[in-house]
Amino acid sequence: MFNIKDIETIKGYNKLSPSAKTLFKAFLINYMDAQGTNSRESLVPISVKHVEGYLRFDYVRYGHKEWLHVKGSNTWY
Image (cartoon, rainbow, N blue to C red; front, side):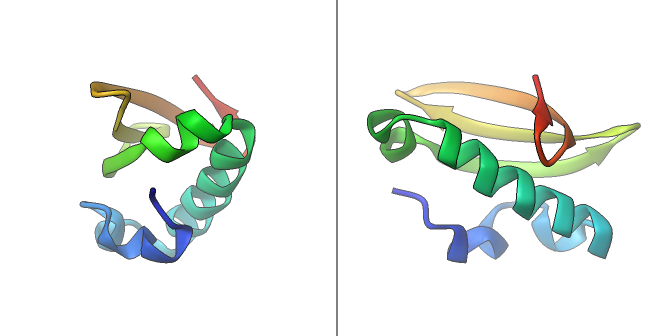
């Protein structure tokens, strides 16, 4: 299971600006809190990168690769 303390191991995290790092960390805490136990345990972060106007967060959950637009700490789709 991913631990928020390991956020720096996510590919691309260290390339984010300080404000993007703060946003991503707040998002990830909120996102993990919004997941059920099984979903949280199966989530494996792959990468994060800044794209025009949002952060792209790639991850694997239940063996399927997925990604999210992260617009704010409480706004993703």
